[in-house]
Image 1 (cartoon, rainbow over the protein chains, first blue to last red):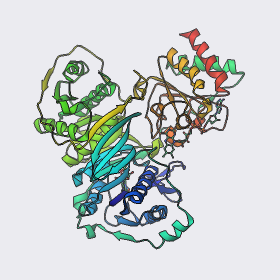
Image 2 (cartoon, chains in turn cyan, purple; image 1 turned 135 degrees about the vertical axis):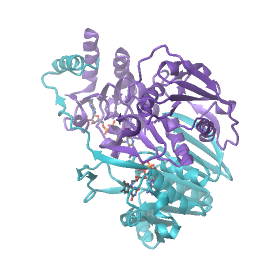
Image 3 (cartoon, each protein chain N blue to C red; image 1 turned 90 degrees about the vertical axis):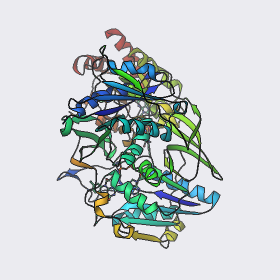
Image 4 (cartoon, each protein chain N blue to C red; image 1 turned 180 degrees about the vertical axis):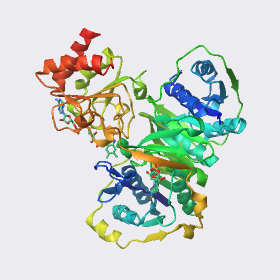
Length: 257
Length: 321
Ligand SMILES: Cc1cc2nc3c(=O)[nH]c(=O)nc-3n(C[C@H](O)[C@H](O)[C@H](O)COP(=O)(O)OP(=O)(O)OC[C@H]3O[C@@H](n4cnc5c(N)ncnc54)[C@H](O)[C@@H]3O)c2cc1C
Ligand SMILES: Cc1cc2nc3c(=O)[nH]c(=O)nc-3n(C[C@H](O)[C@H](O)[C@H](O)COP(=O)(O)OP(=O)(O)OC[C@H]3O[C@@H](n4cnc5c(N)ncnc54)[C@H](O)[C@@H]3O)c2cc1C
């Protein structure tokens, strides 16, 4: 089976975030594989181990993303592809990303494509479904279980806490929700092997994409931190006084009850 | 220039979701005086049309078909595209809900437009509209605008106030669409969410974490929630420990909520949890550990044992309500 995984290198949002010059400071920041993409990689490896085939992880981004791709290879993916847009694309949005990823995928005869349901930094959740639409294949988002028998695919997906059971068929794109599996940590032998696995690097030219074709449709005009809240008030005194004070504050100061 | 805006209306368990009304209010702003048309898709949705008009829609179009009983991206996609073909809108507003999140990228892709997802606020009107959305798990915000073509946004529930409900009049018409070739067959939906409460619409949420220690430990939280007309929510920690069902989970993986009052009891405040609630208007934290991260986003905090504090709070609220 031809299995592809869309992997995004993301800023680790558990870390402190600093904005300077209207941009998120990336120097010295920690970058990780988007956590929802880890579920996608794990599932891809399991599907391959059960049904045979190959897992190919793809990232669109800069040179630095090689690190995350090596991690995916160390987990057990077979090959990696980095579509390096650093020199070609100045402004991008979800349209841009999906277009480039779909152009790469269009002649690959993918049976199954896995993505994360949302990136923890950009947070739109658009890229998976957009790619599926451009490839004209079906997609199912926020999945928590995947079973493949022949062409038939049985899925459970999370819809705002309810569990929807459905049936569909390959080729298919799915996006991973937490709960799908427990992603493995790369093992030491895995890390050693990953160094020798193929990592192909492509640029837009290699995909016959013109910069004008991928011009962003939206524009970020400002990035800012939420207005600093007046430091929260930790109440003091004995607990029963704190409780009385809290209720009075909620009623008279915050006016929420 | 004024714009014609199409808005997706949504129902849940036989009634309209509030986000449908909020989307109409958002659409009014974006329209800059143009027409706002609500779209309802389902197997039998006509009865809801009039209420959308009461909340400000100028017109309502329903698309009804037996194949639209359950949401599928193919079915709803065909229905929505047929309405778009007929109406030629200049802007689109969906809720950032399970349906909206799944459907909007498909429509944006077909229309080759941008899509601004999870909008919490709109500045300006008409052509000058600028959209605000949380990024980096809620640690920052961005202002985004559309560069041309159709303005397409999804709005986070409970952030944009709906218009006042008034008896208004407007046309409710139906469009007949042939729904074919569904590639997904829905077999069953296991309802896990508590009946009636839609956490994303609740004005008051009492949320418990691993610190609640057991399923029974949630009883005092439920009692307080009932008193305040709110709902109970939970952290992943509490769900993983099986104290409550995952349908109550709040956060990046679970529901994103913006109540007027969020009380977090026995929740440490991991970023994935904060991503789902940090936009709440007032946050109260109750935690034994004075260093807990949740205090960083809290407006008011009590350092103490939740099993002591929550019942006392309930008693105190009873006195003033
Ligand atoms: C000047 C500028 C430069 C930018 N440079 C980059 C960049 O180098 N790389 C980048 O990712 N974003 C970049 N962005 C941001 C970019 O516009 C969005 O982050 C990107 O379109 C993905 O959107 P999202 O974060 O909402 O992802 P979502 O739609 O929430 O992502 C969902 C899933 O789609 C897949 N996916 C998303 N993005 C990628 C990707 N790049 N490669 C492989 N799979 C992906 C993953 O499986 C992910 O879990 C840049 C933005 C600007 C303004
Ligand atoms: C990809 C990914 C997605 C995730 N998505 C989510 C999500 O959507 N939602 C979410 O919540 N988490 C999510 N998580 C998990 C998150 O990282 C945390 O593990 C989780 O939120 C912790 O839950 P908790 O605060 O209940 O537990 P803990 O971190 O164990 O905190 C328990 C707290 O209770 C306090 N406490 C204990 N006893 C008492 C008492 N008697 N009185 C008062 N306080 C007490 C303790 O001091 C402590 O602060 C996600 C993680 C990942 C990796």
